[in-house]
Length: 472
Image (cartoon, rainbow, N blue to C red; front, top):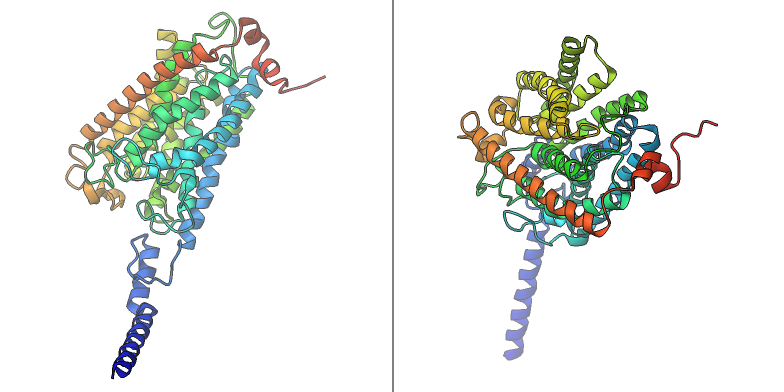
């Protein structure tokens, strides 16, 4: 009797196990599979729990890999050539070395803890260490940020933003800061400014992530980096150039760009790469990306013309440097707004982007006398600040970005600009205060500036043992 009972129990368990296994292996229904396909096409959340599309969607993932390459292209070689053409011949390699050095340094920091501090869940101010050393960052999507893009692709895409942001700062201090000082400054700045600020704006539980964090205390929006990238780097650049002091001979010697051809080529590369920067920030190949592509084009083109018109009215002629500056200013100002505004909003932004930064560069700098060598403050700080504010006024549901209705339905078109002001204020205070502290730490440890003799001879030959041009 006990043996028969045992056989019955075992048979029952085998039947139950087989039934459960068959249930677990039951493929998704046709309705679930179609729903998944619709979700992929529309960049929505998966429907089926046992999806036939287990990993990333190829179209969205492919676009984001291209966008990652485009954003890196903005720094190497875009920004390097843009800045390199604007300095004097004796310092062109120093700019290239700083761009290359920052790219390598930030990549290491991003792999170690940077990505985790920005995009891992943590608190409203900084992320945790869940993704330290890119642990768990594989080819499956991280649905906190994208349903159809590989986690590793997303991490690399965001790394390119982390690379170009501190690289922008070198424009203000070009030709007069030691290479090792730049590297130490960037290392500290990434931990104290960039990582916390990027988490607050873009992190899933960030203090100022108005789009995705329903609990955000400041419900701000920043589509592609007006505060995170341009305000932070631009305001830090101003403070650093003030602490560093003016170049030897500033105001007494001609310090004209040595190669405007390089500057123009770099500008074109920046414009092309900026499509990855702005349209890529949709984190999908969808209608939001298309709108960002359009608004970016309009703002950049119109700002270049606006700047040129300002030059004609004040100087009688339009310059190549003016066209290039206008393009970059338009790209900067549209950055926080590109996925949230219509074509009309982009036109308004383009006009303003060509006028206000023009006067910041041509009038304000001369009046106050600071040596912002390549106009990082005038274009990026002023432009990023204006862009963040204009986003608060011009963002609209008519842009087609349905994400604005997730947590911001009641404030878009009404009080959003107040939240933008709060985010701008916090960004400015963090960038300025941190830069003061970091600059003096660097000054007392490795020193900020080379000797006057080294500066007169040029940083290329003294710091890198090379010359940009050998014409003999």
